[in-house]
Amino acid sequence: MSCLKIWEFNLLEIKIEKTFKKDIKRDKKSGNYSEKDFELLKSIITSLQKQEVMKPQFKRHPLKGNLKSYESIHVKNDWLLIFKLEGKYLNLVMLGKHNQVYKKF
Image (cartoon, rainbow, N blue to C red; front, side):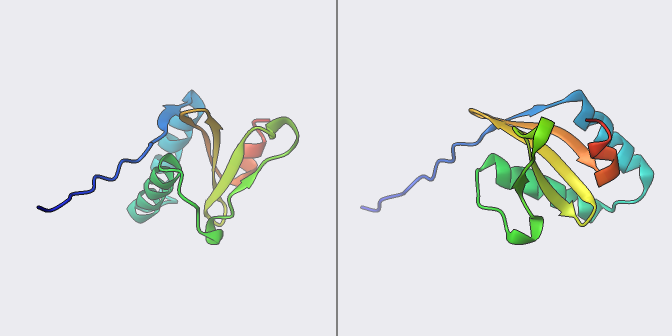
């Protein structure tokens, strides 16, 4: 008899804010980011959803001030994903360059 282990991930459910939807449309239209960049973004979101430890290159860090309940990840040097973990949810809030993201607050 063989024993088959089934790995079950407790995936966080994804909530997408209107601001994130607008930001991703803007960035797709801009031509500044390749399909490879968007694939990287998708893999980062999947890693967050699986609650995996992020590689240091992505500089995951909590934000301060008015944004203290949010976190940031550098998808690329000046392309940030702003998100919030809320219980069983991964809330995707904003995406963009530093000046695009922080001018909203």
